[in-house]
Image (cartoon, rainbow, N blue to C red; front, side, top):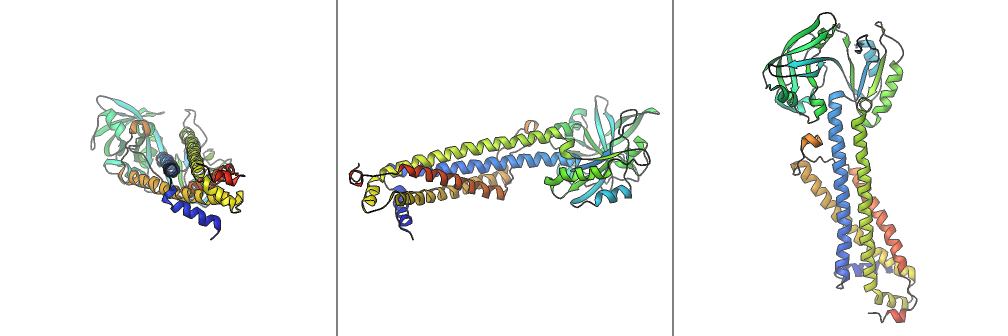
Amino acid sequence: MSFALFIAKRIYSDGKGGKRFSRPAVRIAMMGIAVGLAVMIISLSVVLGFQREVSNKVIGFGSHIQVVSLTQTHEYEMMPVLTNDSLRKVVSSYPGIRHMQKFAVKLGILKTEDDFCGVTFKGVGEDYDTTFFHKYLVEGEIPKFSSKEASQSIVISRKIAGTLGVKLGDKMYSYFMDKESGMRVRRFTVKGIYETNLEDYDKMNVLTDIYTVRKLNGWTEEMSSGYELMVDDFDNVSQLAAAIHNDIYGPRDRNGVVYGAFSIKELSPHTFAWLSVLDMNVVMILILMLCVSSFTIVSGLLIIMLERINMIGVLKALGATNMDVRRIFIHYAVMLVGKGIVIGDILGLAICFVQQYFAVVKLDASVYYLDSVPIHIDWLKVVGLNILTLIISSLVIFGSTFFIGINKPAKTMKFE
């Protein structure tokens, strides 16, 4: 054990500062680090949780990537995609795609005796993954939608149900515009009600079988609005969508339709741009907390050095250099910071776990899209925060020790 480390340990174990002024200074400095780190961990986990929950809901409605038509009809509607084996083979050949599913959409009007609302009917079949809608299902069930026959069943949101005043099991009429007959009518039964709290999506999306939507559009069995693709790594979704787009764009199918592929970030740019702004909030919080922690470290260390100035004079009289004295207080401050980091980790993670499992802090879902504060702990980022705090603290400590420059040991030993 080095001389500097030995003296630092003695100071650290001497009543955690020992003297009447340095003891509270040490505690304040240590708690400043702990509270600062805890706030950074909580802030980061909340923002990551919010971004994750909202993006997962948007992805649930639209998947990671959509392969759709780029060609419009004279009525400005998108022409159907031939979702046959040839297109499937091309798209599924890309690594990282874990699921493909067909979908078809049709704009329509849901009407009751008292009210009506315009919605988008999304037709799905046997290959559609309904995990997302099962997660947010509040009443009823998700029917086994088919591509072979009409079930006459729909799943609507609680927002639509409240607007129209309908409940589970009710029947209602739906009206669709048709270029030949002018208007077509279907009667559906409400089999399920979901709620995601994303108002813009909840008020528009109705789930039904793809067979019905194809018939309403006048499409054959191999025609759909497109493919929805789910990928393994969301971080690469933009690159993967661009690669698929470049591969399928250009050649027209037998109906003269051109295809394209778009990521969910391109399909919902405003939502993801808004979520990315939250990163700046986290950066500002991190900077403020690091500044507060640095200030408490410097102030506490200066008070400790001031009260230990007699000891510094003795060490200088015994032949210790300024660097030797500096090393003593660097070792001491690192011990202080280390304990503060441990306390901060325990405090921050404990609060995060309590919120994650018990949802203590609630939110107004109509404003925040979530009914409680979300938490997502990224352990790699938490370790990064610890390392960043230690590095910044070490630099601050090293800089503050340059205040130690005693050239008259005899005079400082008499300092009171």
